[in-house]
Length: 323
Image 1 (cartoon, rainbow, N blue to C red):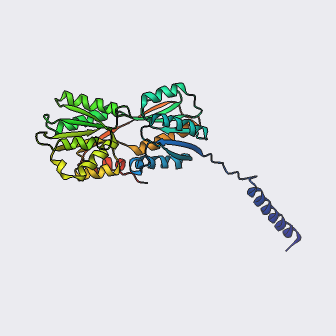
Image 2: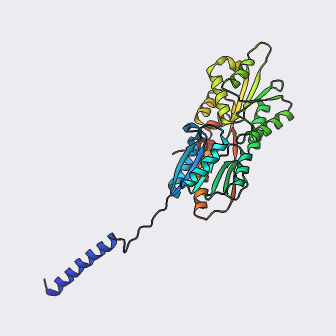
Image 3: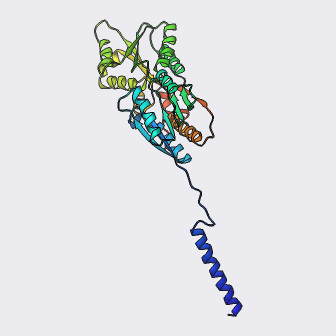
């Protein structure tokens, strides 16, 4: 090997070593630093069944948008004051955005008008007009109620009373759903009775009264998911009640409720795409953190479903989304 060839090999080796050192010290190849966005989600219940599809949508968006999602559960359901305290606490502890479903829409609006927050909010279910709210991912509660009312009017005899079960009209979408159901049924000639839950025996007591001689048959519409779940469980526990409760309808789409719909315990339910709700809420929160999102109102469609639709391809992806 000639002297020139040896020098060429030596220079090549030095160049390779130099390139290796430069790349290993980030002088040439600089890896783009991925910023992780901490987002807090304040929910009412840690029940995976209730938030299953919602969480799946959030997890998908979190992976795509580099978000770190923390789920914060209310110590007591429907505690409006505690919910607002948690919003302030999470922002103080470093959350760049907060996602929540207001316990009480009116009280939330009043509280936000009096509060100055340093992080954007994404509000689910309700339409809250406030500058700090960057996105509302909502569903039309009145329309959901109308769909339930139309289903009852199509299936139930008008002489049978209809009981409207609810955790309370002041919570979530319950008042809007109630107005929609009641308007349709009263126009159709039905008699509606509102039953607000007081304790664990409230719904059972109403159902048991239908068994008494001379009471007659009745239908039930649950205005919220917890009420539908409780009423369905009461009917599932005793076949006697099925002779007197001619139909159970309500709002919800959990796996347990879909199973009870399949078993015939529930006649029909109204639901919406909770996977999309979770995904869109995280997507909008990240965009707000990055400053690329203007205030927006997103209205999700709702669907009335009976047992035959459970196997319908149109609803399968919505009801049973893949991980």
